[in-house]
Length: 116
Length: 114
Image (cartoon, rainbow over all chains, first blue to last red; front, side, top):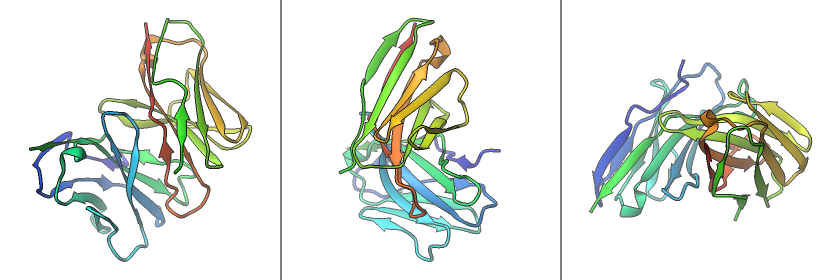
């Protein structure tokens, strides 16, 4: 079974608007971490934001916020005020702290296009 | 800043060749990882290492081996390259610990096997 599901292969957003990238996950481990990474065309994966399963508040990092809905097992990334430089692939990932060992599992990714 | 450096951005090799992909990190991280990235499949873990000379198989280790003789260097070896190993290869490193275990990635090596 897919542990990380990103249902949107591609998304378009107008510059300066907000966009939500979807991510659902599946785990029975009560302790886990959720991550979002950005991969521009240059290829390097860039860490954006992290949410722990026991964190009470949604994580925020500048224009990025993570909409964490634990009961629904979703961890959507919200980018506010999109910029042209946000055009990239975005990957949702999860690490199960008790059962997963050192492994981080990645979703298939969503390609975001920001239109001027 | 954490720096993870992969020795080549692009490589073209012939079927049957032995291929070495090198990765070096400069932040004294214990963990190092090799992934391959294919369209629609995300990143899949090939091997990881949690210490010098220690390694663990990931999800798709077949056809690959690794070497970690020094803490900062993690090499991926394709013993006999095949066309189905044409892919983007990403190296990453991270600290041990519960605090999110953020992985820091290199720029990737795009390997073509002809």
